[in-house]
Length: 496
Ligand code: GAP
Picture (spheres, rainbow, N blue to C red):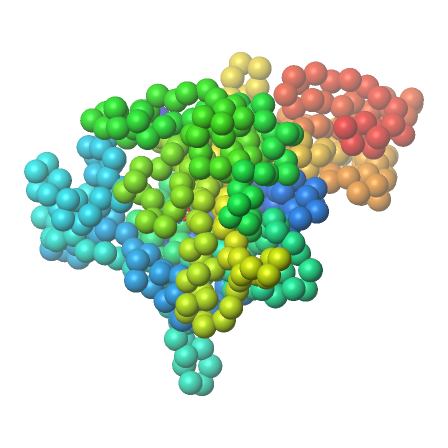
């Protein structure tokens, strides 16, 4: 049977230590995955690239690192306890189905955000049955996505955070005061989030524990059209799906929308987005994803439909990537106005406003929220290369900045003098802080295959000629070309 791209990517990922189910030896738990030694390196590289671009290169961003368990009043105020739900229906055998997704997949109709009664009507009209056993589906109910727990001897009610953002709002005043920050500034956080998804699926695309990299940009309400990086980003092209395009396609496949090509400047000036800050956030993301090896044509921004957008939002624009099973959101971008700070002021009875020239100001928030796991899956799919005539194995064309290692060092044969030379080169590279791997087990062809399968861009081979003239071959993963260089020059060559 022909494997889907998802299955192919997962087969290599499992075999090569990229990903595997958590607690696998006990049968696992749906919606939980661990990153193996190769996957963890790719994940760390992604996080480092994000931090370099969005935190370190901007002097108005402060990074925090908050806890994942927070007391229940936080989520009462944020609205998660009452509203963070997905529509679900149970069948007579007790299987629970997430209904909006099921309708989208089966009927190719947009269903996210529709009220439960409407979803129920669609189920009845199209005679949809339980996808697991074919039994009748009962009424559609709201299924809470929060993971609860109890803390301490008094067993105080608490919850695992469903997004990293809440810690940022809670610590807003502390950060602002400690860093003497002036608007506009941003607070960034990288960490884990938890959602009790009804139907986890598609490997790490929909899981119950996942990583997020979020920034809350705090901006004075009258400064939303004065973004400090606008000049740098004005000409960046955006592939943009308007709400009108989605309405026109209402009866077609939910991912089949036509898009328009605009620039960041157009997005702002022609009012496709609510303000200049949002236009810049979208442009910044296009540039970042180009670094990650995702082609521009596989990226689009979708203006979320009204029914998918919370009432307080000034506009949500998902960055979606084209995957083998459709366009998938990997970043949620939201103009949240002052909703979060106002909600926590009300919930905590603490003043989170700032005093600006004698006036109390509650900043507005633009929030780009990156999902680490989905981005990694998207990178794996987009860089996956099937086996062909030139090479009898599959491989990942990972950009060097994301690859788990910059190079692999290989002695051609199991001879002590070759192994010694290869080990010396490996140690020199390590001392120079290069990410290198050493492999001396098996035939050289198999070792090249293993290196390609985890996307290592260069393979350096020490062979008998190396003993005579102090040279080694460097094999390029993408072109398969081999060139000889002086061993002493190899660490420098690997840096580029
Ligand atoms: N603070 C805003 C927020 O959390 P979101 O659109 O719910 O917004 C942001 O989530 C990103 O987090 C998504 O674009 C996605 O990449 C990731 N994400 C959300 N739920 C996920 C899940 N169940 N599994 C994997 N990633 C998820």
